[in-house]
Image (cartoon, rainbow, N blue to C red; front, side):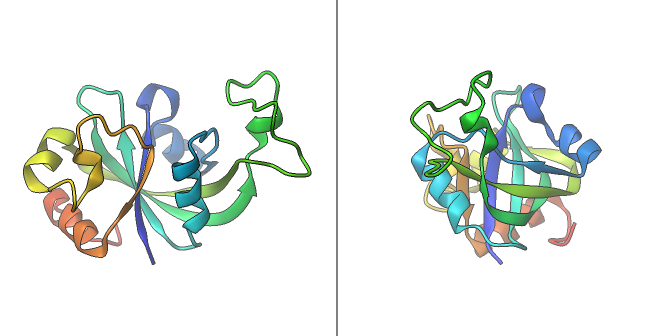
Length: 155
């Protein structure tokens, strides 16, 4: 099982949305590196849900990868802000995963707290100006995140 950190703005799609829906397609990713991280995901991987562009930003919950290798339907929807006219159904550029809600943590682990506890090498989200919406998390960093959150890894 691998660990990931996945960002979303809480007013666009927050942990409360995922909790209400149970599962979601993590679509609309239009960065090749983030897309490639999604392509590396496997069923059963876990992801920390990170509220970005919030005050404060930080880790708020946990998700599980339940489907992989899905074609992102928003790339073909001309009404979507994620529409990609260069992407064709016979050769889609963008794919996504389906994630299931696992937990909302009792407290947020803020970006400020993450910066105090981790180096950029240990947890790349602490890098100033980091805009990548999906990042891998090492097993050691995941264990440390759970300790800082005060919850068990199977939350």
